[in-house]
Length: 282
Image (tube, rainbow, N blue to C red; front, side, top):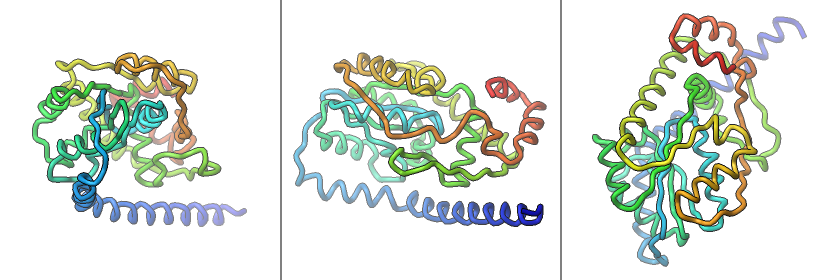
């Protein structure tokens, strides 16, 4: 194929990716504005008709984006005594605590947990995240704090997911196919700075609360560590060990050159910033 043909094909792929990005962004804006209220109304209407039972053990996974939190939810949810929900507070609603507690009461599991990301505090207009988390702890929720050391990979992964729509991939969904994308290096730096600020807030609001630490690179990056990680967490929750699994597959390799068309440009740009440290693990 000629160079012109390659350029035309690349341009067509990028046009499709950006069209999908705009379509997802429009849908996401609708969900953020109305999705939470709809879910809240649906739960309130069905709550009185369903069997309810207080979960013996409750927990919350608190983290920031692209840290392996969905994988951790999947692993814990595969434990026979645990129901681990996803992002319950992803969309704005009237009564977040009431919604969480009602979801817990309807889980009918020995243990109930959910994922709470730092941006959820902003989505719910929660002015004091530390107080919110403290109240959750006061209501019996044990805290699992999940972090990722390499903020560059978190940022690139998030940027890629937002543009391509590939946030996660299930083994049953067939072959994983990825298109390379181009990112603006300055936009990427701003994304890293934003993730860094959310990471710092996470450290601040958990500093004075009992919790257990999970680090993506140590506990989730390699599949051979998954069982021991869950064993550690169920010990913390006071539950028996059980064989767990996840159908999710890793979507983003650690080498950014495998999914960025301008990886060299990004690397050179990062070398002039304090974030050059994150290139050492490339």
